[in-house]
Image 1 (cartoon, rainbow, N blue to C red):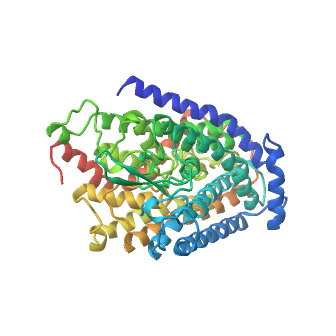
Image 2: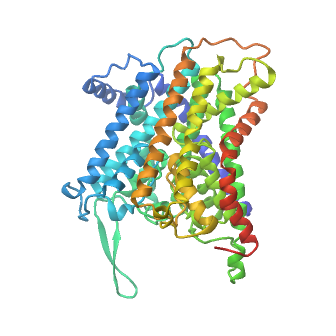
Image 3: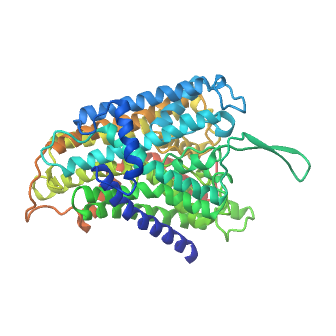
Length: 569
C-alpha cells in the first residue's frame, strides 16, 4: 500500500469534513425554520408550494400522521414511475424508440428508485428514454433522498424535545430538504461534473468511426445532472449500465474525487446537524467517529487485499506488482477504488467504479459485510443517521443492564416499548436477506441466473439480497437479475427493507418525543466518550454481523482459502 494512496484518501476525507461542518450548521438552521443565506431566493418558492398544496407549515404531525404522509408520497411516486415505464413507447422524449418496460422489471425498478435503492436489472442507455430518466428516475432520486433526510430530522427532534406529541411536519421537512439542500448542491455538483467532462445533452447518441473503419454508435444523454443527485442522494443508479466505471459518468481522477466527496457529504453532515439539534455537538461527533472507524477499517482491508493481488493470476504469469487489476479502471488507482468500494456500500449508495465481483474474496467480503452491518457506516442520506440511532438506543439499553440502571439516551429513558420497536426494525434486514437467499440457493429458476458456481455463486446471491434489503443497489455481477423471480423477490426485499424498517423507527421516535427529559446525574452513562463509542461499535458488529457469519463462511471466506490453495470453481 503506497503512501500516496493513503494521502489521497486522507485529503479526500478531510475535504468531506471541511464541507460537512458548515453544511451541518446550515441544515440545522433550515429545519428549525431559521433564515439562511438562500432564504431570499427560496422562501417565496417554498411559500407558493405550501399554498398550492394547501399545506399549513405551522401545524405539526404526530409520528403516525407523519409516517402516513411519508408512505402516501412514496406510494404515489411508485405509481407514477411505474406508469411512465409501462407507457414509455407512447410518450415523448424517446429518441431511441424504446418499447414499454416489462411489468416485472417496471415493478422492480419503481420500488428500487422510490426506496432509494436504485438496483438496476437493466442497462440504462438501452432501456430507459430521456423522459423516464429525467421525469421518473431523477425525480425519485430527489424525493427518496429528501424522504430519508426528513425522517432523520424527525428522529433527531424526538431526542431534542421534551414531552412533545409531535415530531414535525413531513411535507415541510421534505420540501425544505429538496429546495434548500438537494437542489442547490445538485446544481453545484452537476457543474463540477460538466467541468470534468461528463456530458449533458438531450441528444440520444452520436456516430463514430473506429480506427478499423467500422461505425460505432455511442450513447449520450443528460448525464451530469443525473450523476449529481445520484451521488449526493446516495441513490447510486447510473445513467449507463457500467455506472461510475463508464467514462461518460466518471471520466477521470477529478470526477472520481468529486463522486466520492458527493456521496459522503450529506450523510456526514447529518451527524453535525444532529448534534446541533440536540444541543450537544459531542453526540454527533461520537456517532461520526464510530462511522468513520468502520469506514477506514474497511478501506484498509480492501486496499491491502487488492494490492496483494490474486495468486491464481500470478501463477498464470500476470505481474502482481500493481495488485489485482481485474474489473478496475486504471485511471482511478487502487487507493481511491478501495475507498469508493467501501464508501458506496457503507453509505447505501450502490454506485460502483469497479466490478465488485472481480475483487479478491477478502476484498469482496468487505462491501458485503458493510451492507449487512445495516447501512449505517455512515449510511444512506438520512437513513444512516436514524439507523445508527437505533443502534445507539440498543447500546445504552445493554449498558444499563450491565450496571443495573435505567437506560437513558440524551435524557430520555429507554424502556420496553422502545426496545421492542428497535428490535422489530433490526430483524427486517436478516429476514429478507437470509430468507430469500436460502430459497434462491435451492431454486432451479434462480440458480440458472448464476454465471459462477460454488462459493462465488453463493456470494452473488447473498450480495444481491443484501444489497436489495439494505437499499444499497450495487451488484456483485455474474448474476442475471432480470428474471421474474429476481425482479419480484428483490423488489419485495427493497420495499420491506425501506418501509418495514422505518415504520417501527418512527413509532420509536414518537414514543421518545413524548418522554420528559431528565437531568444528567453522576450516575448517567455518558454517550459521547470512548466507552460508549466502543460499546456502540461492538453492538453493531454483534447484532449486525454475527447473524450473517455462517453464510459468509460458506461464501467469500471459504473462497479466500480456496484461492490461497490455488483452487477455483
